Length: 111
Image (cartoon, rainbow, N blue to C red):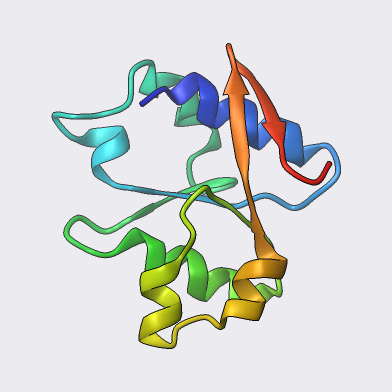
């Protein structure tokens, strides 16, 4: 994974939205950390938050979004979270935002 792309996504939305990104702790501190992870250090604890090692980061993201009535930038269709009852199909349909990158530029579905 690329920290540069995470930073690009945060910057894209920060101009018009309150942004909170949640990554698993290993993405910044682990053996498999993101390439160029140091680019994200200035965002830690302000716009970027780390889920504890061994936890389900998806669950933290979804619970935070539900509490804040926020949208979630993900290409995950959230099927397992719909099946578990954490989110409804309707919520996933209206609050999940798909995206892709072309180089380091983010392209967001529905924009």
